[in-house]
Amino acid sequence: MSENQQVKILGLSGSYGLTSKNGLLVQLALEDIQSFGAEVFIWDLVEKPLPLVGSEGSWDDANVKEFQALAKSCDGFIASSPEYHGCMSGVMKNTFDWLYFDHVSGKPFALMSTLGGQTNSNTLNQMRICVRWLHGWVIPEQVAVGKVKEAFDDDGKLVDEDLRARVSKMAESLVITAAWRATQR
Ligand SMILES: Cc1cc2nc3c(=O)[nH]c(=O)nc-3n(C[C@H](O)[C@H](O)[C@H](O)COP(=O)(O)O)c2cc1C
Image (cartoon, rainbow, N blue to C red; front, side, top):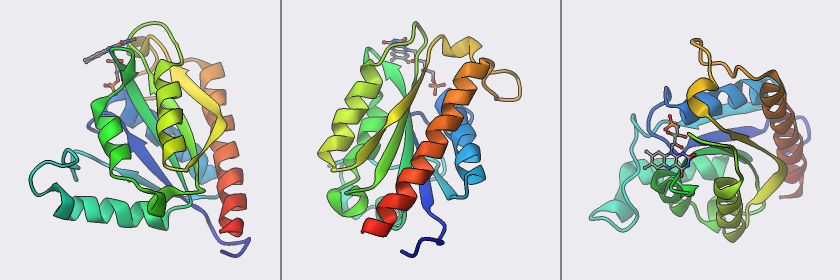
């Protein structure tokens, strides 16, 4: 990749639907990522569900093949998961489970999570471990949105300005890292 080529970033949500809180959060971050010069994509699990890994027919599933091809063509990823019982959602894990070294090795990931209760880093830490196993590079900036029911206004924007600024900082770091890594591959 030459230095002036646009990097491609894929957004992944660990909840179904782009109007879920994680869907909103990923879209919000992608707006920033685009403003820093990247081309952005989002995988919508409502439109194109990914089957459970290993379920009947899953290895030959057309959505899986399309998802993997898109991931392979991208230079970086932003993923956001709800916290379920202190863990990333099964949906998020299943999405990660469809990614292999071939699609993501050496590419940066930015991570976010949402919680019904108090902010913590459980889900973010789990996602970090999972991505490390894929040989993805997780950037140090991360965002956890606690008390998520009150976190967004009616237009789907984050109410807390400090949190909004953190998302923006993270987006900038992801684009810079993706552009740098892309010249190394
Ligand atoms: C099965 C389940 C387990 C949950 N466990 C937790 C939890 O352990 N801690 C917490 O703060 N919120 C918990 N929640 C609340 C979710 O984190 C919250 O609904 C989610 O972040 C909202 O995002 P979404 O609109 O993208 O689903 C749980 C919700 C569900 C459905």
